Length: 362
Image (cartoon, rainbow, N blue to C red; front, top):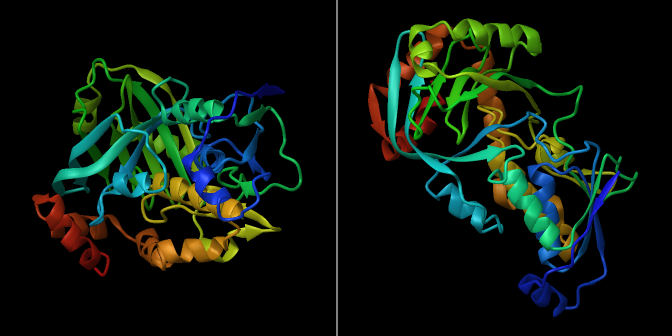
């Protein structure tokens, strides 16, 4: 077991909350030190609470391994500004200004600020390490290599090991030698390489990511084999260039039809993928991890009803995404062709925002 503690920092939020008569001696216990758990921990600590984080792994590392993670910016409200309103201050390492969607026979380019990019992993510049350093400065106690006690306030243990319903298999590859533009992401909708999902290529700092995200086949070996076949596609080979493989990507995700309905389990609040708070359509769970982590901490600190906070923020977006996911699970390559063809060869991000809802009815 590794135990870390540092002196607690002061908190403006602590002054505000304690001044209205809320208890100031709560110890918030959190199971899991992933993105959602770290956000919950730092949010509670900034409010002046004692925080203990229990992590079964001996080191701080996302379950998927080191990789690039994208924050989608498709809504009318800037997604980074939205997360800042929940206390998330970390800056992305890059912005995406060219988002390419490909199908078997068609290609579309969306121009404009469509994604913010963050690195996950052990390097100092990754989200995980930046949040961890903030947590240490706030006096949060970390118990690595330690199982959480039976009763915790917040569960942030990631996707259930035997209940995941999306799988990512691929590799990170060196930025040196590759031909991937650092402000471009590429998604290939093709059941031959990613059943029900897409092959994703995303830029990083020292290394980039390429993986098949599958919603239909959940066997890692088979999906990795499909991804490796995709590496022989001429345009994919051109992107990879003379780069070298760095490490494997092996990720799972768990999305629920209505995660708000099951957000409280035996008085513990579930956050992130532990509770099924994941994007069922494309597995962009970064936003949900941050917001649910922050709202769970607020619920504990201010004695507010967690499901009410969630429903007020998300309304029916989980149910809507789940319904569209069922359509995608049955989509053929011809359907993917029609979807990409309907977008046309090129759009601005504003044009895409206007079309996005209509396309989901196709």
